[in-house]
Length: 310
Length: 252
Image (tube, rainbow over the protein chains, first blue to last red):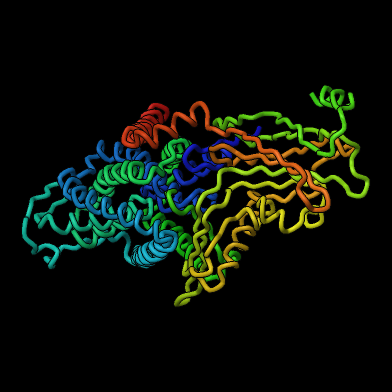
């Protein structure tokens, strides 16, 4: 049975089972690794021929669903520092608003694809390399002397000496609100540009820059991602009318089921092994996009609506 | 319908030198619903003439179908510091995003250049680009590229020899509209030519519109974007919560 579905906003016709399957696959990976999966789904949608602006807005909507699914389990485990999440969220909303404006500006200039691709190569490449190096070291260390815990920043650095200090009990910190708000803003900006939640940047920043208790890192990151991607979704819907609800719904249905399966699979793997696999996946996506930028394209010209059209 | 037309034509009419088109469309509305997978339009008709057809030239038929033309920007990538980026752009005044030309024979042989210029029939003529030479050094390359890209995407089609013409009187053309249609009033043009000259032409319209759920969502997204965005969020949150609750029931 052919199950072609016409998407009302993207204005392309795609196979419904393909979308469910893609959502499911990304869901399995996101459940396994505790990430939203935006960095996988957005490039996959580009590849399917969905316009970049629609892919980014719809990708953000998918991350809302997978983060809601993930955060509920974390709340039950007391793995969310709501106060820290709130501070990051305040920065995140500002960053996302700036990102949506920059996105609209670059779309008009015709450079949005390049900017999105460069952001992907830069951030995925850097985070992937760091994660790969760190987890490789952890695996080697574990082989020598047994388990070694993740080292979080405990020394007082410039990050901790800024004004407006606040007590974050769940995170075990008494620090200025500025660094978490700035991290939130940076991640919110990327969320709007790349259609991602930004967990792959926020989690390392929380551990290595802020020095938060590791057990609240994933939950707090998910908590603030829900609201930032929710804001991004609505902002894209209002400013550029690029959110495709039909596309989102199919990806989400596949995604949330996949995420539940993935989180059960993830329990069976060791943390270092999981991280090294995630690092390889992130690096593979970055390498694919980098090749697209470096190799001579088969068609040098591209067509976009001009004048009155968005 | 065709039979009725034929019968009517066979009842010979008073003599007159002209040839006129009498035509019909299998449908003049296309509704894009959620499971829309393309649509086939049959354009048929007959040539009414008041005198026997001239013996020294052959009658030819050209049928075109196009969606509303829109301004476009064509961009060209160039290698800058090792990476390929959009580095030059040309604005096209108007071009359709779907255009099909069906003919009874090779278009160069049945249509001369003056008539083509006047009626904008071939693919390179339907792209309206006036005064683009000021925008980039090789501006015509951009227009050629637009034609090439849209031909490759199957959005522009040159269907030579697909119009059936029987006894220089009855003609039919089947045009397949793709699944990736946009909304609007599609223009259908039928041309009769002899010796490359247009002897008669007729224009018709096909209304293409989203219907049902597609229409509802499209209007909501454009007229109530905030409500639409919040609806999308509610669905996402509900799905996220639902999956987590359902799986806890299955495997606590």
